[in-house]
Length: 148
Image 1 (cartoon, rainbow, N blue to C red):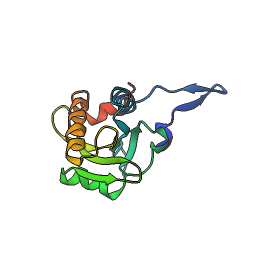
Image 2: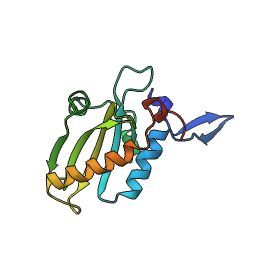
Image 3: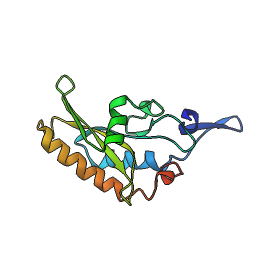
Image 4: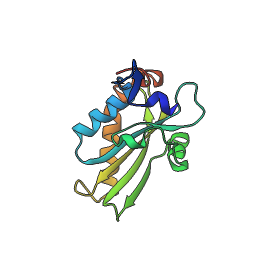
């Protein structure tokens, strides 16, 4: 599956860029619009896949990696995870990723920079607002895997 998420494909002997899937386009859009975020990542199980993966991230080197157990727990319990990372100067937040209809389809992970806030409650409120903006742009889980 990671290969299908690759940025480039071989075609007629030349590298040609492949259009981003909607999930990646949304991650990039959110990252550009929210400088308070260090990174945003979308964790989902791709159609036909068995593993929950990072399918989109503002740090593209993470795309294709398996989700950690704590990311899966957010999706299964519906409860936010908030972890202050003092050495990295950020607050790591995991929230259920929802589609427009309110169905949980995965996990969205955001790292809120200390330059925005050091208060976990403020960071969680901001991350929830961003997640809710994102939700409005997700008609379905399947659509996230189609070209943007």
